Image (tube, rainbow, N blue to C red; front, side, top):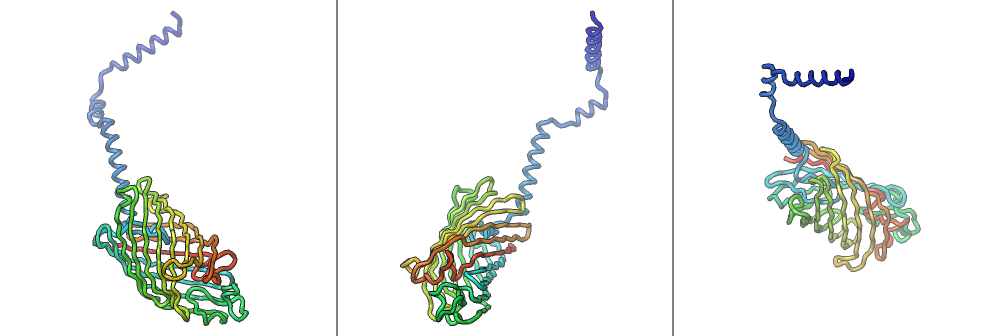
Length: 338
């Protein structure tokens, strides 16, 4: 037998003799105290699921607005309230200065688990100066002139125009017909009448929503139909708006969501979609943060192109639509449920 074979045999015998040694009392106690691996595995899974559920309850609220301009079907639960403050800025037109601030203070209530009602107090601030360049809008050869949404025609020859105050009130109702949390597609109906100094309006929406990836991804679309009576000019203007707004938001972290919003805007002369006077496209990002007691959403969108036709052709220039629109729009919303 070679030296290597002898050594190998001795090592094997040593290993065998070691395994045949009796267990010490301390070893027996450790074995008795150690739970089976299956129990540990199940306990670990349970703790992970429980912590995730607790975390999700802490940072998500029914009724919070993940989007800027898009309405979703995340409504207030029955018997609960929410205060929301919204501030929007429409900035920049063909030239000069155009800043239109629009504020909305909202109180919402969950009438049932599928019906939400709300009331708004609306305010505004307008600052315009030499912001239109279309010759059809600028009378008496004054170009550029002062015009736009909220600016009366009599201010066209002025170097600037500014005004602010309480605009009026709005009421809102949302009926969630199917819930996107439990159904493939959530469907809802929205109605909002408004009475104000700048305009009276009735707005209706059909809301469609689908959730994916354990509700972390929301895809939402709104078909918007609104009849308006603009009151800021010398003569009231009747028009109809038919829009589509849609987008998505994705929860990238427990408290944070990011998304994108798109708007296809169409204006028509009169109350019956008589003649189309303008169309425009807008797109931009949104960001949403939710804590245990409040949430905040910020969004912006930029106008990427538009067209106008008679009798509204004076409201376009440089391939974009002006009147109540700007080069860019910004929106911030803060909500506090209780």
